[in-house]
Image 1 (cartoon, rainbow, N blue to C red):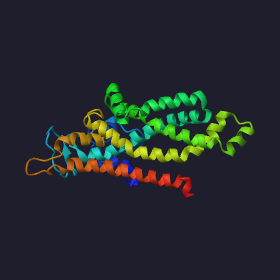
Image 2 (cartoon, helix red, strand yellow; image 1 turned 90 degrees about the vertical axis):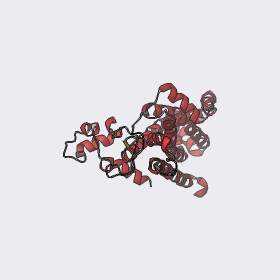
Image 3 (spheres, rainbow, N blue to C red; image 1 turned 135 degrees about the vertical axis):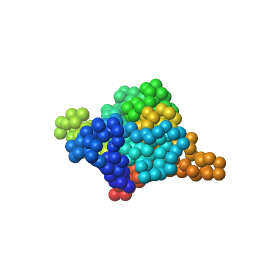
Image 4 (cartoon, rainbow, N blue to C red; image 1 turned 120 degrees about the vertical axis):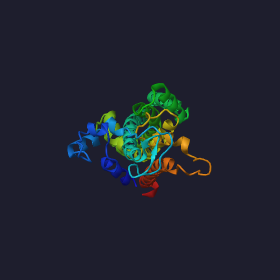
Length: 296
């Protein structure tokens, strides 16, 4: 299932052709329906902001049903299909960026605390406990409210909160590994403490760390969607699943006598979030089983 989302990410310009400013940012002529290969590679590595802005047709508040020019319908004048397809890139960019930051911070904090112990362990773990003392979503809401809405600030807030769980996992694994014979052997050969920690101990903690990271990859779009739903997410019209849910909240129930008249405004973005999260959770569970010593 994850491969399907990866495929959607790679084929975004084909599945939801660029329009307006996005076409100009990609250097597309009037005759082109997809970007040139060089432009496609550039936008794949660094997607222009204009391409993450959903095209808008009119300012009608009422959703419009699926039609040839908008196969999944429109909400607030925005094309739902475009938001879902390019929103997949937003989900991957958000998840991979946050994980890169949190894995770096969490691994270093957990490694230092677990391997060296003493005062460093006490200070770092007490600081981690302070983060765990607050509900994660509440802490993120406070941070985003202080920083302001926007994808960059969401990434900062998620990173500042999410590293603590990874640090605890790394620390527990390091505490177990540092007592094993291969660590004593490396130390007896004259390896420095830093080399032993980085080259011998940390690689042994990658299994549980990877499992937790994959699970977080599936949870991050849900948290980001909750922030968007509360008005603290990405700007209006940004290609983001949570943004689509936020725009659709007024239309969850249709007019009297037609309760499901606007079924498409919540079904498609909600389905994307659920399937994306379930896919990563299934992969995370599989990795947990694979790395569990009891299954070896």
